[in-house]
Length: 473
Image (cartoon, rainbow, N blue to C red; front, top):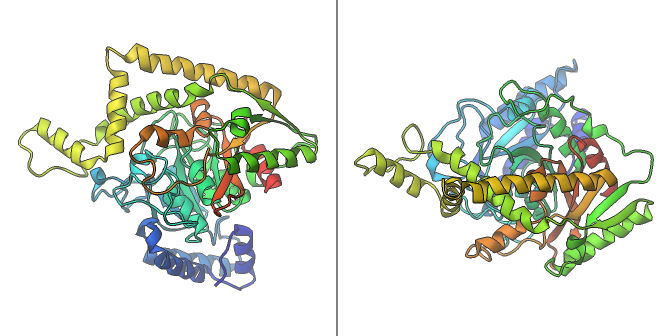
């Protein structure tokens, strides 16, 4: 059984008759069954995937060019993306037995290009978490070491690619939820510019931060998926009308690049030594290739996480108010009046981390504290964006480690939310300012745990981002 790690090889073998889509699906289904201990999939669409594969095999056999650009690519989707006629739970009890009424725009565009969806992937509840330990379905385990976390919130999506349970996954990134698990699992995670991909059909966590993004083994495959998902959508007024570039074909400019690196990501003692050293080696490689690579300091770095958590919890408090036990999902059976219905259903239906963030957000939005917290955080967000713009006035890219440590042990940080939140210290900037970012593998530590390195680029420069990621691979 060939374990495919890039789509180009799949396409070549399909064309040469070495494999069929049906055989690909059967291989993945066997691997999914063998890796059940990793707890990656909440639902596997076995029969449906077989039927899709048969239909696409017929298209490929017809040789009339009717097969889509993704014919033969088998993917999974994170459990926050609606797919009509299929359950969607967002990793939560509050959406028990809920069936999606429509398909997310990003998912539909992939289906239109003949992608095969093999199942729905486990994630932190409502995409709130950095370890995938907050799911109502139980924690996902890292394939490199099943006693360690895969990162979050798209942990199931990252492990599925890491363990070869599908070729690629579609996740969501609100503060690093595609890139951080990609780093922990040794794969590629791409967060596009805010508004590059329609959010229609994505269950909202924080609407001004949420982005749908691909996880794959290679930057080329992530770029191809983005290329197909991106673009205007009448269902999402925040999506950009800018033309979609052929990201997978993008080239770097024919000149030395100017790359900034975050000084704190290389010199801070808070960063594990193996990650500091791996990042420094990559910096030296870039310099040896003729690029200018210089340190920069972000004066507002220490305000990134507070700003992020104040604003995202405020938006979550508003977005999650719709899950009330009245119209759909989980409802407490012993309620006596409307107020107890709300209280009991939401208390029992939401997990501890989601309840914590709703309470924090409600507090930040309360009349007495609105200006002190929410308004102030919005002002700081603008200052962070202005400082980031000044960096990109001088440089083409901003480089940093993706995470301060490799994957930590299951349960290691669950009792200390602040330590858990610090896992996002390098990833939240891209969401606060809305810029595109990519995490690519950067070797392993002495324990064989994957390390990631992150690149940030100016808005809508995904092509350059992918081109540099390919050059660094």
